[in-house]
Image 1 (cartoon, rainbow, N blue to C red):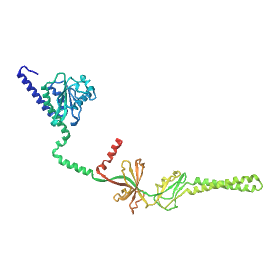
Image 2 (cartoon, rainbow, N blue to C red):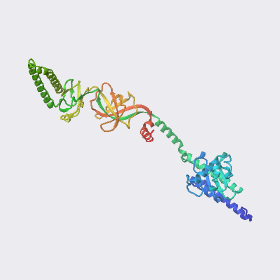
Image 3 (spheres, rainbow, N blue to C red):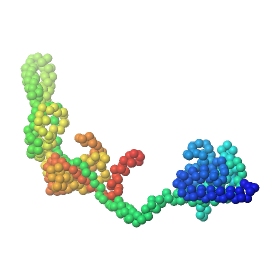
Length: 451
C-alpha cells in the first residue's frame, strides 16, 4: 500500500510491526485450542484475507482441519471434505515446504472443478516449518485480491512462530507428565521396576471350594420294586455286615397276593386231580388234562414270583461297612420307586475328598495336583491329598450352582469321618502374579468381547 506521506507510511509500518510482535506473543502464550483459533482468525489483523484453513501434519500429531469463522467445523459437510482433499493434495506436492500461490490448475481435475464454488481465486499456501525443514503444518489463505511481497514476508515471519508453538504443544502432550515431575523420575522408575518384578513373581494358582469326605465305590441299597418303606432295621452310620437286614418294605399287599395265588394253585391242582380220574372213562376229560396241567404250572410260577417278592421286601446289606443315609423318620412310610436309592453301605476306611468347584472359579488342574482340606470341625488340622479325578462337564449342585466335580485321594493313614464337610484348596501350576490377580477381569473381558 502506497502512502503519499512518508511519515504516515512509517507509522503504518510500525503499527503493523507492533501488531505482528503482539500476535507472536499471544501465540506463544495460548493454549492448543486458542492457538489454532488465533492462527486462522487473528492473522487477519496482520494480513487481510477472506478464508483460512489450518492443516497439521499427521506425522507430528493428527488433528482435523481448523477453519476460520467457525468454532467447530462440520467434518461431514461437503466444503470440509473438499477442502481436506485439497490441502492433502497440496501437502503431497513437491513445493509443500515452500510458500507459493495455489490455483485450481494446480489440483486434480475433480477438485479443480469445485474450486470456484468453495474458495476465492487468489490462494496462498503458507507452510509452517521448523528446524531442518520439518513441516509442522500449513496455512491456506484465500481472497479475491492478489498477494504482494510485503504480505508474504509478514506471513513467513509468523509461520516460524506458529510452527514453534504448535510443535511445543505436541511435545508437551508427549512428555508433559515427566516434565511436571522432574525430581521424581528416579523414585518413580524404581517403583515401576519393583512393581514389574512383583507382577512377574511366579505364584501357584489355587482355588477354594466346598468339599466333603465321601466313600469310594459305595454299595447302593435300592428299592427292588415300587412300594412303601415299612421300617429301617439300622440307624444312620451303624456298622453292618453282608446279608444283614437293612430295610423292610410293606408286605400286606404282597402277602394278600401270595395267599390268593396259593389258593388258586390249590384249586388248579384239585381240578387237575379230578379230571385225571375222569379221563380213564371220558375222552373229553382226557383232552382237558393238558390245559389243566398248563394252568397248574402257571399258578406255580406266579406263586414262586410272589414268594420272591416277599423275600425281596426284606432288603439286606450287599457288603460290610456302615449304613449311610439320612434320618430314619424321613423314610418310614415314604413311597419308593423301582431302583430308587434308599441308603448306601460304605467302608469307613475307604474314603476320598469330593470337591465342587464353581464354574466361575475353576482353573486348569492336572491329575496329581496338591489338595489341602480344612474341615469345619478342626480347621487347624488340615488334611492333605492329591487330585485323582476331574469331571468333563459341569453339573448343578444342590444349591443350584453349576460346578465341576473334583476328587482327591487323601494321604495314607488318614481316616476322616464320612460326611465331614469343609473347604478344600487345590493348587495348580505356577504363573505370574499379575495373571493370577487378573484372571477374573480377563475372563469377563473375553466374554464381553466374545474372544
